[in-house]
Image (tube, rainbow, N blue to C red; front, side, top):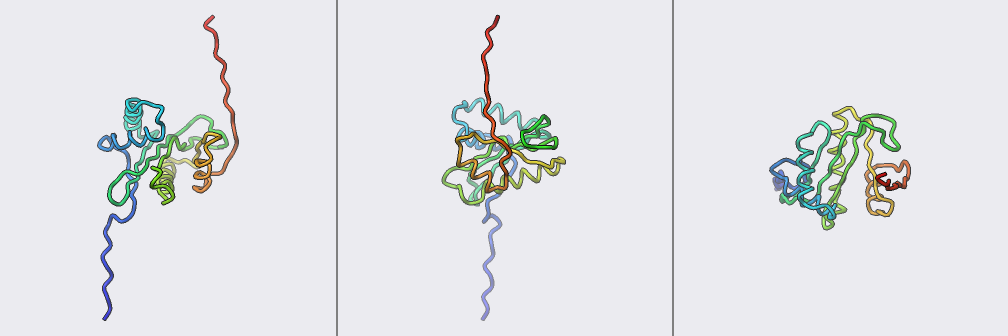
Length: 163
């Protein structure tokens, strides 16, 4: 007697969805986890600005099969020069974050693939990002996602006196 295969539930895989006004507080909490030095109210304002300008930017959440938000990514079109790139506009990964307990499961890859589809739909031929020099974990993640390092830069500034 042959056994029938078990039906597979539709939601056994993580899913990527666009950030929306209805998911604003989940998104803000994840942004704050990535950038804790910024007040939540500033995150909320920046996230709302992204929602109003969806032609130039996108933001995505990744959810676990049970619906728990586990990470997010934001990208924007950059029309100015992007270090290491030869085309314009360039899709630029402005931020990506997966909660530590959910890392190593391919969630960042899912987020980046969705951003790549968004970028291609807008005619982009390059996808860029940047990482702080001392953030080795993020550098490793970028390499694992297929990014190649193009250059290293140290920024300088000089304060000008008012006179």
